Length: 200
Image 1 (cartoon, rainbow, N blue to C red):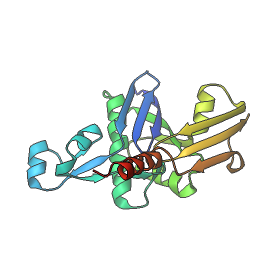
Image 2: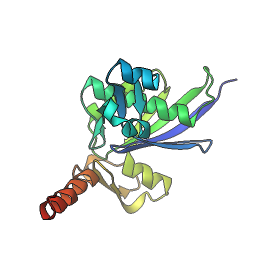
Image 3: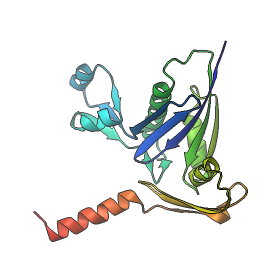
């Protein structure tokens, strides 16, 4: 008998998280490291590492951070890395999935993610997620908290800041904002300020 697994995924620039209807949760860094050469492949006994394991061994790997501003970069390397990351978190959250089981997923994206960005997510999930709904991350938060009326949700991430004004319906372009200067930008500002004062 088959089981349908319902999952929610936050595909973030810095970290990717998943939660399932059975309560399983898993978070990894949104990064893939491909082996630089045959020696690296032999050492790890695989072609690539994902998340914290990749970051820890980054000197031996060609690193790919596939998301910028919360959306998949528009190149094959980033799309493939995103697919590997999503497959990894799904496998971690549903370790005993049977072949006949189904996976239905809701994947959060920045408030004003383009149609092209949403299509890229649908592309990379083909073959291992059966049905996908792509929704605005601030709306997902408001829905989960049952705060869909007269509410403003602000999501400060690594790649983008998203703001949505909730009026009791799905969010539209008119009541959402995405700013691409977020945590990563602030990190750079702080680093630059420290190095300016203390160059050594």
